Amino acid sequence: MIDCKGRIAVLTSGGDAPGMNAAVRAVVRTGIAKGYEVFGVRRGYNGILNKEMKRMTFHDVSEKLQHGGTFLFTARSVEFGKEEGKQKAAEICREMGIDSLVVIGGDGSFKGARDLSKYGINVIGIPGTIDLDIAYTDYTIGFDTAVNTAMEAIDRLRETSNSHERCSVVEVMGRSAGYIALWCGIANGAEEILLPEKFDNDYDKLIEEIKKNREAGMTHQVVINAEGVGHSNSLAKRIEEATGIETRATILGHLQRGGSPTARDRVYASIMGAYAVDIIAQGKKNRVIGYRQGQVYDVDIFEAFQMKKSIDDYQYQVAGILGTRCDYKNM
Ligand code: F6P
Image 1: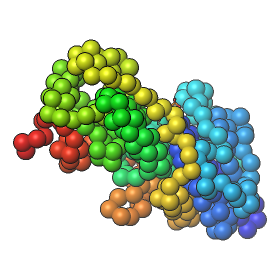
Image 2: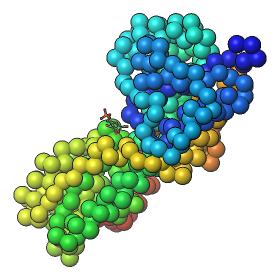
Image 3: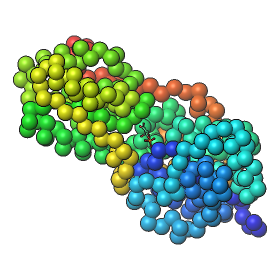
Image 4: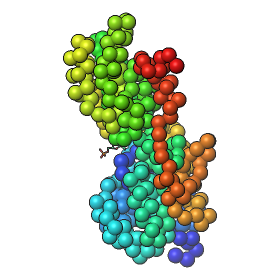
């Protein structure tokens, strides 16, 4: 390793997100440009445990930027979840001379990184999840693409819903986060949005609103339901039975995770990937990278976990006022 500043490994973990490839490419190319050897780890943390690591060249990351998914593959590792797994992963990193590990993933992947840091490995996190559910950052890789994908699908759905004068319940991803639903709620002009952080389970009120708006002349309705609220099929049945309005459920599912990343996801992912190498070069340890107030920044990984993400109340209010939710009508 003469003339080499050190070894950096990069992996993607958890649910894939469009833009992850752009981030990996940026870590590899910036790392090489700044005098590091960069290793790509396949299949997330499993790849460390199975020593699936390959030294990357500048050209190994050609033709990746524009594709969704992750060419490094991703996984949720059961073995790494255990304490012995993390210890073993740290030993393997040391054995291979890996000084820093860049982890691109969501909350769960960051928890793994945080715990690995306790075994002496320097970890740098880049937020990659379509859910936008990481508290310290206003941007996560993949959210922009996923919202645009869902928005286009819902636009199409609205056309057929309108033609048949139906009510459409559309379920978007977000196991415990309603950001995709909130943004589609505004972008698609949804009549109703149900978010796990906000929905009070008052289905009778929801049905009453749908009924009232029909009576007032609305010809069709779109209800965006976040995955975290769920039960879209039974909700559609319940609405139909209670209102007599023909109602269909559509679950968009994993199609929201695929597709070519938007310009925003390509650019921010690239900047975050480069930034990860820059802070390693500055000697920073155990940081996660975020975006806030127009700036890319980094924060201590332990501190990041103290922060709580909540739904932006003002955005939620706007979605309500522009839709048909009664609770915001007379504010
Ligand atoms: O990527 C985040 C997410 O899309 C969540 O919204 C969803 O609940 C979860 O991943 C599902 O992931 P998988 O089906 O791959 O386990």
